[in-house]
Amino acid sequence: MRIKGIVGEATTLAGGKIMAQAISLAAYFVLTRLFSPDDYGLYNIFYSYIEVLIILSTCKYELASVVASDEREAAAVSRFALRLNTIVSLTLLTAALVLWLTGALPGNFASLGWMVLLIPPLVFFCGTSRIYCTLYNRFHRYAQIAISDNVGATSAAALKILFGMLGITPAGLPLGAVLGQAASNINYRLHLGSLSLPATTIAESRTAARKHRNFPLFVATKDFMNSFSANLPFLWAAVYFDRAEVGLFGLALTFTIQPVSLLSSAFERVLYARTAEAVRDRRTVARTIFCFTLLLAAVAAAACVLAWFFAEPIFTFCFGERWQGSGIYVRSLLPWAFIGLCSTSLMFVSNVFSTQRIELYFNIAMLLLRAAAIYIGIRMGSFLLAIRMYALASALTHAALTAWYLWQTLRYERSLKV
Image (tube, rainbow, N blue to C red; front, side, top):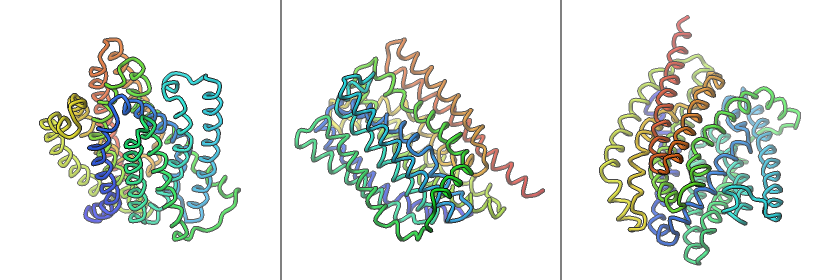
């Protein structure tokens, strides 16, 4: 594998995302004047449930399409994931409807009110889009992935602005997210025929699901815990602190960790497909992965230095005085952002080498460390302290994960010489 080729494909894949993200982030110049920090605090709580439930909706079966032995198996396991996503989403809708109608919404759900009914459709559209995205990734259709991401992000940004101008607050934010994701989903489906997927039976889907059971057993469990722990500030800490403060942190998270997730996701998808192919052919991969990690680290370090010095004045100038304080949270998140870019770009390694069980232990440790950090912040009565300790716990665990991913790569290289 060559760095130039990976960067080129990742650039294609991330190009649409970067453009859409740029539009989405630019929309904040308007959105932060239409919606208050309190509104965004509520939206952050809403979306935190989406990021957790989306893991359950597909059980990460979509990732199996990349390592499937042939196109027929890839199609079979993808169709199994689509059926599972539909069943889980309908179950969530039924439960949400019953709880809302009976007034029995628990915890943070109660603060969402009728907006809890928007969670199941968003889970469905996100799950279906992820399945299609990974399937397109297997066939190296990066341009189509970028287009669909762009359609979804730009639609969501435009609709949120429209709803804000119409005074639909705070519901305009989750409504825009649902309709935007639906637009991305539709775009994927319109071009699905270009993949020429073979027809498969339900029996073949079940067989493929059993073969790739490591994904629901270990990858889904790992990602569920990781997503749950990543959203602890909204799922747990938000119950004890002012929602406007949660909104300030949410804005900082959007402009710090979200760009990192965007880039690492693009690189991870390309590296996943290329590394899986190389390992199937028993070709070397270590030099490319090591050089790529060093390149990411250099870029991330430069970006973090700039953010450390200029985040607070930039946030206050761009979003207004009522968002003053977000820059403090940006500084707190920088260690996690720096190391996380390298770590999450290499997440595919455990899937390629079937070491998901061990990776699960790392994520259990991260969940415990993050929970301890949030607990201490709650006990001390400081949301900022909770976030600082939470970010430090995340950075330390991601550093350990990065070292482990690189060690696995070296072990594979040694096996080629035997």
